[in-house]
Length: 493
Ligand SMILES: Nc1ncnc2c1ncn2[C@@H]1O[C@H](COP(=O)(O)OP(=O)(O)OP(=O)(O)O)[C@@H](O)[C@H]1O
Ligand SMILES: O=P(O)(O)OC[C@H]1O[C@H](OP(=O)(O)OP(=O)(O)O)[C@H](O)[C@@H]1O
Ligand SMILES: O=C(O)c1cccnc1
Image (cartoon, rainbow, N blue to C red):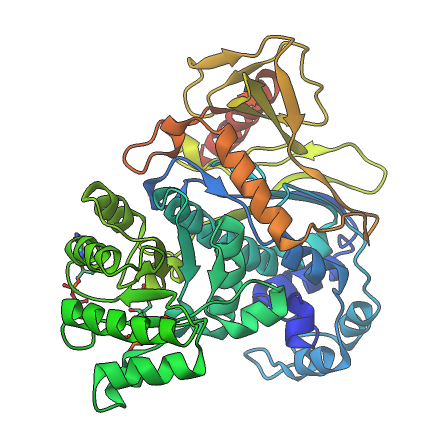
């Protein structure tokens, strides 16, 4: 179930007020139908990492496909007042919004694709009024899910094939934060969630153990485990750290033996405090010596990719990682920082005019054009991504230029395998894309990460993957920057 079904009402007002005031401005000035191109992209990989995993497109597509202003939305807008007490929005503008239909063309990178800074994840072309209104909801969806999918991919990579379960709902940034995070975490490679609503809405596997309160509600730990085993003879994972962990493991083993006598089998134990390396190693010994080699050890307690990596190095014997807070809140980077910038404009029937936003820093200057990303491969490994404009056809053996250092260039031989990453999503307002099922998206993430060199994947100081501008586009961008800077100078003289 996707975002508009979850909310069951129009999401047209899930935007910032300035999008609506600008929309009224464009409409009033007769500029609403000017054709614009906007790109959504981010400037840095999160978590000081070497890559990102894009996510959120299915919700974005759903939002666009159902885009409309309901009567409730319009009457709310009609009730808003300006500072002099006048209506902020005119009746005839509200009538225009009532009949507004989404007519844009959208291209985007499929979910589960490995992506990098400065490349468009989504490109929208259409009447400027529509493109502008959609900035905020597109950013909120793509920014958050991409951030969490990336965090999950890093955690899953650190877990080296062990099962990872997402436990974060209780610590998430509100109910939708928790739900979207569960979906994105699954895209990043997490195997299951403890969140039942996410399981129901997204058809994701759900898993869980039990809480300390269960143990505390019985007179003894052993009684608590026995009672749980009575109710779930084939699905019991005992939380063993309420009082003394090693003693708790011995009690779990004692109950496990009784379960066996009754034809049941203990599935696992969970460690939630203390030294997880030491306790898992000792716990494994106790379980193995007692004839329970198949009882798995689950660990939780403020874990993230760095702690998992450290625990692995320490020889921890953990089979399943339960990760909550640091996964769903994308610790320690609360936002991806993705932006949505105007890149080209044309009056109906006119020529495309390239647009860019100047900044003191070259790195922050947006790239003009109608952009596409061409990814090149050598021996089944990604070797570079070239951003080009569809208005300037790249050479057969193209050269790309580093966006911030023109002395760094890379040429791709003619026989280099390549693919264009943005695919058609909407044409003339009609959806032409069918989103794959979540397990397929998860599989895509896995395959994509295998195509990325391990030096780009390591957690500490990863190698920077090469992303550049196709040379004609680079030249065009530089010329435009110079032209705008000269204009600025002349204006000051
Ligand atoms: N072997 C280890 N190496 C590094 N970090 C560890 C190790 N074992 C546990 N940790 C982490 O150390 C942090 C603190 O854990 P610890 O259990 O000591 O404190 P706690 O959570 O406050 O315990 P309690 O719940 O008993 O109060 C947690 O993030 C935990 O994941
Ligand atoms: O540490 P996280 O990565 O956020 O994982 C989720 C945490 O939530 C639970 O603790 P909590 O104290 O909320 O409940 P409990 O009494 O069941 O342990 C669980 O035991 C984990 O420690
Ligand atoms: O099922 C669990 O063990 C669980 C679920 C949510 C949070 N912490 C643990």
